[in-house]
Image (cartoon, rainbow, N blue to C red; front, side):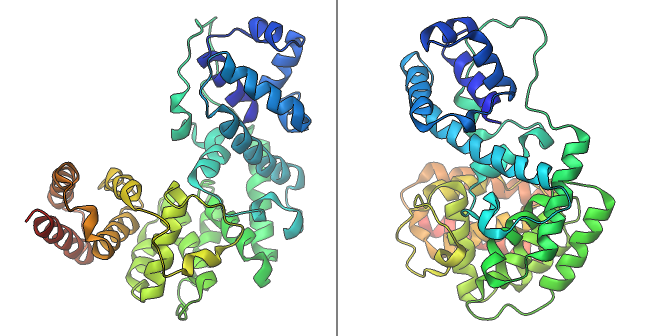
Length: 353
């Protein structure tokens, strides 16, 4: 991932490999090695990495280049660890999946070579270098390595059962939703039966997130039934708070980095605004989305807890109305979904007074 991000940054600055090599200065084969992954950027010392990113931004790459490259290196570490280990288990205190709570930026980088979808944060890299023949549109992961990576995720999910391994386990389960092999989908169904059918005790964020990861992963794999069940069970107030805090962190509304899931139970949510989350969720009220039940439920909970998000924001109210009309006309909503749409319409009307 980091090599491909480096290429995007170089091209956004209008630089050829030869020009960047002269500017650094390094041999052009060094640039080629970084971009192809043959010379891992993660192996650079900190000083060289800082000089590389500073020179890139000085030559015209976006100011966020260093952050994007740092996140790509973290994604590389997750993928490399899984591919190298295969079906073997890596201790939680040495596994990059347990180093911190992932945001969507990291997750989208990890899954980029699998989905082929450009991570949203990299859209600011607009190439200003003419193409020289066919070029790869995204990083690739050979099928054998992909299989080893997902086999590793199953292995650590099955073996990581201690409380201190909860973060490693749930983040591995979430990523398994991008596999799609029938045996993995069946494994996820078994995981849901283990986690989703037991009551979530008051304040039990681990149990809540295990059930969430299994149901969201199954929805990503094409089976949304369990996500409906999960949303239907999420009625306790602390579960709603944890869900909103998780979403705020996931999309970057909550800016502080977190190394475990305890922050989700913080009932004082004034550390994040909610405007970014409001628009993020409205973007995802697609009737065809496998995650629609959770997206709609979360938007309803967000507006119910913060009606001010719609007050004095005529543009947001108008956009929400159009999205809700599209949902209502789709005919795909459950009774709970219809109630949530009605509640959001009512909140929008109240905010308009």
